[in-house]
Image 1: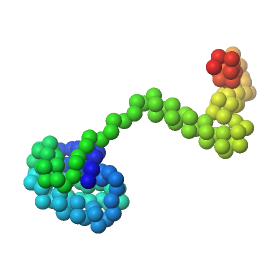
Image 2 (image 1 turned 180 degrees about the vertical axis):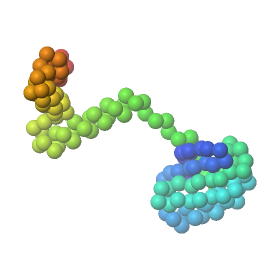
Image 3 (image 1 turned 30 degrees about the vertical axis):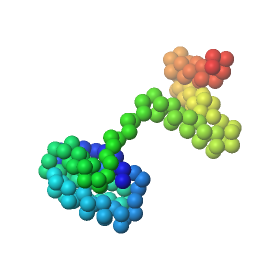
Length: 149
């Protein structure tokens, strides 16, 4: 069985089962883990697919004991992707969602431009033409400018 380290705190270790298992298998795993030296208490959470261990020993020693007993192989949690990649993916998903909901009539750029134009009109109606209205309008037109892409 493969367990992934998800969270670690003082005297506590949360491991995720990969791949997830059914509640009966979770109970067997929890029972096997409870027999390992250095573990005071085990809570199996089938709905999240994780096991929470309360430790009385060093976490590294407990992990080594679990692996030595052949209960499971424990791996480090995968690294989080860079923020830039997450933002890029989010923007692409947002763009696809807008296209889908508008039946390809709008995309993220055109929606942003419409919002900026609406804000510019609002500022112009308030009499703020020289400052906010013109700045918002220029921003809207720069978003729509496809020659710079």
